[in-house]
Image 1 (spheres, rainbow, N blue to C red):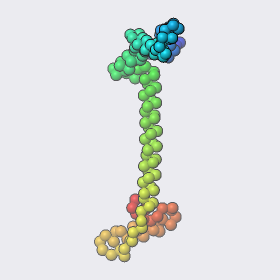
Image 2: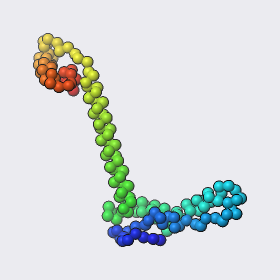
Image 3: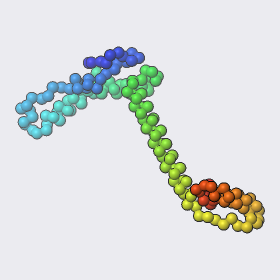
Image 4: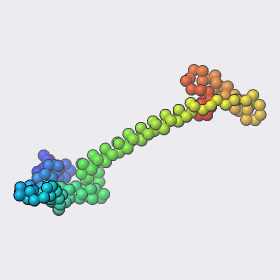
Length: 153
């Protein structure tokens, strides 16, 4: 089995090309003439089985995944770390994109709020409500948002 230059943290650094070195030889030509496509499928099936045997490429990757549950971050294989970091970053990007869509929809919904009458300011609720509406109407002149949307927000 070929290796990269130096092991990291005492781990083996296998190459993906090791999988190709484990493939069995291509079957002879007379076997291909018997049934079309059978030789290629048999070759692929044999390669799949050999890579899952003990010491095979896929067997070793499965063992690394199985051992990662009981290992510290420094003992886990580098490809598992890369996959976990890539998945975490993808999840963060997905959440930020969704947050932007939610905020955009909320602001669009707030700007479409119909204007409600402020009333004359009488009654207990009007004592609090009317000054707030007047203040927002004065301040909204400088903004691109309707006073009713500011009040609803």
